[in-house]
Length: 361
Image (cartoon, rainbow, N blue to C red):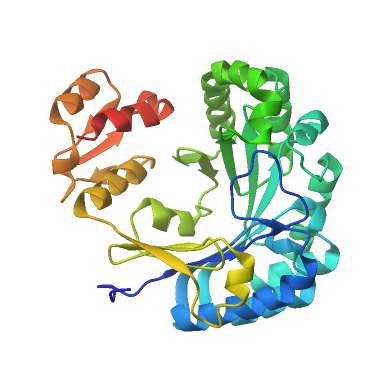
């Protein structure tokens, strides 16, 4: 890669292993390879030392897959190899959390993102999740007892079979558990997957309900004191996901592990998603590089920056806007304009994808 103008301060680490691949998932995951966990960590550490030698970063995010599927010793080793950081987040599945693992996580992180997805047994079964509501509650309790400082719950709406009562039940349950942050995503099932084949008609029905569900999620979480600071993310004061904010505000970042993406100084690097090739690489990780032209970079900055609840400075970005559409959308009350900024209005945030696609020249 070309050397960046500024030091890269954000690191993503991919741990691909899962006990089961959920039907709706399109992340780079590997199942049934427990004997390879140690070898993968060896390779990961090698890439980490080669590509991210700095002793300190602002944020580190360990995602997957299911990083908490690693045994406690491997997880401890991973934490020792990571650079020091102000924020260290690890994604976990509830069924993997034991008292010992909770202690390891509390010592090695500042933040846990727990994949709850729902608290309704029939929806968890549809999503092919292994944990049931009692396991989610137990995981939260163990993590809090161990001293986890900031806890996010990942939840999904628009699940086949979900009713308005199910949504209210999920919101009630989540709020009772007292998370510091909630990521509440609309289910996206990729065309052609076994999930869409199994639930196609019901997914179409759910699509008609999405807007109402989304409005209810925002209403309930705000009423409980959460800030709706990004399209799908809500936080208590001081509990923003700073790693994700780096993505949304256009910061450079390095990604290590199979399938991991880096964006540094106008180059986007994607590690190839082959576990055998990664293990055999001996430091020369197979990857592809895409050069981002100025138009792509500006468009991405607008698309991501307008997801936030704060004004976006237009310095260097205005040329990418369709000015006629900007006038129309402002007149319609969907976009708010400042002297050198724009942001989506309250109404505009609920239809953000449509508004932003119309704004781009």
